[in-house]
Image (cartoon, rainbow, N blue to C red; front, side, top):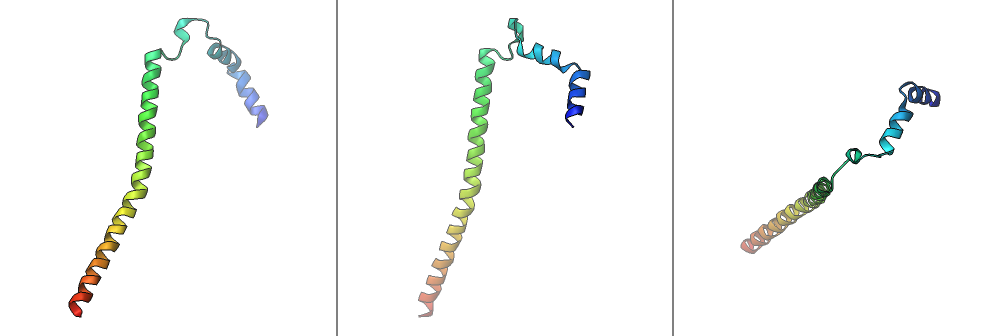
Length: 85
């Protein structure tokens, strides 16, 4: 497996690609401008907030609905017991 990795690494000359990616000598090699970076951070923030909101709602809403149903059943049972007496 290791030999296959080294063969592919040398065959496709990935060492040169690695050098060109990590040695950014020119301004146009920068991946993001500052405003794009801020937009990316805003996107990640909104995505993270949405994820945790979804987890919160998925865990709380069934508990809330189940509690309301049980409370309703208890109230109906109590009302039925009062009418029976």
